[in-house]
Length: 297
Ligand code: SF4
Image: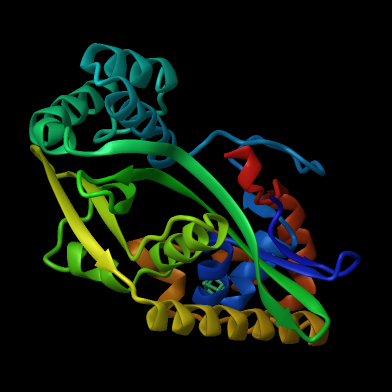
């Protein structure tokens, strides 16, 4: 799914990344989602469309997800490790996310959760959804996502699960997920596409890469229908703000805090820091186009 505003189809398609990019900084949304810009590594010339190497955090996370799918679906540690190594076969240089570290993470996860997870029936892995959320002016708003696991407990309750690998060690790591828009969206999405089943909570399954070892937590996120209504109203209002920015072609630069989120400089800093009349030259020299498309992940 290519997200954003489609004037011909009169739709606004959102996922958590698109939504949080706009909420972080509307100009960042305009560069990443509307224009599809990504920074090009040194040596790349500007072309209309080009796929660039995946960041190591993303490729490591994808390989770990593949291994966890195997642990849940086939309960086979050796096979899970083999699938991790297959997906993470050509890793970019990184001190923390190495093949050896990945194997340690998977073995530790198996030791920590194997017994506890035997009580669940796995209903589905990687449940993709997209559904209409409401209308803004004459645009239909859709919201989509991908739920890592749908499980059923021994007493028949549906539990959604999302795996997160993180290297951010903080006392706020677990509580911060309680208000996650992404997870409320998953609960809404599951209940919307599953007429005969419903869920009101989600387990965040955190795999924490500390400097010297790994840790494993789970946090139970609850969202009753009134919380989901609140989430939905907030998304529709954000969609309305997107339309306003688009119609006026004014995309506020929210600097400075979002420019250094997670202690990293925003990938568009050089563009924003150039006077507007010279941005086209900087755009052509430093960026290429690779539209955000959830089907490519
Ligand atoms: S550099 Fe700052 S102002 Fe510019 S897009 Fe990024 S977050 Fe927004």
